[in-house]
Amino acid sequence: QVHFVESGGGLVQPGGSLRLSCTTSESRFNIYDIGWHRQAPGKQRDLVALITTGGGTDYAPSVKGRFTISRDNAKNTVNLQMNNLNAEDTALYYCNPPGVGPDDFWGQGTQVTVSS
Image: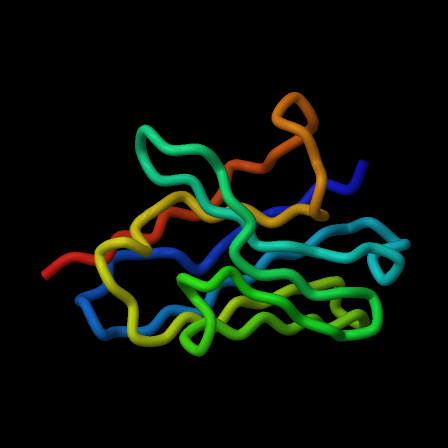
């Protein structure tokens, strides 16, 4: 299973922006569809953005138009540009292929807090 390291989170005011990154040393990175998932306190972990091996993207309705996922296969990196953030975006954000189960490997994630 591929292991990712997430970074880029922080505290931001409503309406602000953040750019998250995740990277892996997995040499076969480009064979995976990759998703950004998030988990708010007391809630389940949800997939919010997905990028396929071919560069196709899909987004949860709650973030569509505000978040943009991208990948750089040469750098084994997936980024998530988040704009117009609101309090509901506050969560721990993780990177993993879609369909990874709760008992599989999940990195430490990166915390995003939206607050004034």
